[in-house]
Length: 441
Image (cartoon, rainbow, N blue to C red):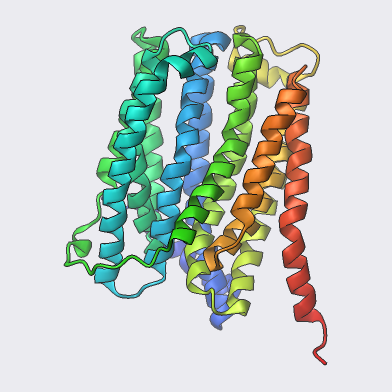
């Protein structure tokens, strides 16, 4: 286990440093806990993001644009299914964080874990049945890719519950370590299987193996081997809210790759998939902040001042992350991308590759700010932001169907919609802040 390892040691150092920076008092203590948790998740997400970038660039270089497009499309399907995984993680995290009684925490975990296995098996069977249709829509050479994905889905859904338990108990070192171990298995497995000549099937097999491994090592520790108390506080409205929120989220983050794979050639789809890697790194880093913010916000929901301390800390971190990453992409020379991707990727065309990267990074950064605001509201009450986001995700799909002459058109559609979404979710917070600042009669 990782409890006494370097991540745990770094966690304690970051906690003490954050306490000194944020000061004393309830608000300062809460800021320090959010900041230290965010730093742990940021460091691990940075490591995971770097390894994912190496992973994707390595398989892109080894497979070429067309085959990389196939592998990326299959992986994107898995990301679409993550709406269910993340819904279970959110529910488990929220309700575990809200209770102090350990048997209740264990009862919540076991209840959701059983339900997650049922969902995992059911979704896997649906993938098997729909594999011919999905393969045809994505222009895949064989439906075996989808069948392999179905095998991993069985473990992928309940993995969310185990990660939600760690998140809800503020066990950020173990949560961070789980993400790191998953990407290590995926990276090493893919490189070995590509080198052995297995190509796209080898890449998918490595992804499935990493999911199974992450699930097994995320098993709760002995301290949770206690009698469970029945009773899950989740209501139907909260469950629906979580599912709707993450369905909208995964559509916004991933469906563009599916649509590009459908509308464009395999080579252009492969080029776009490498561009989307940038967005995934930006979003992963930002989501690490949200992951650490969420349980603290859920627990402090009855204290408005504490809630604002959590929100302001998270927003500041996300602004810093997205600004620095977008600047780094803008400063990177075009020759860099030619050297790392190889001759199998035509990076010229109507729009320079670097300009598309900057545009995509900025789009994802704007969306990440909106996610912080929406996650904050969901952690504190049953709201309508999930439905609002779902409507905007539908607008992206409709916009791409209407405007897809070039890859720049596809990204521009997303940029416009994300700016409107950020504006829409910001208005309630501006109104609430105005009410707080306005003098009472």
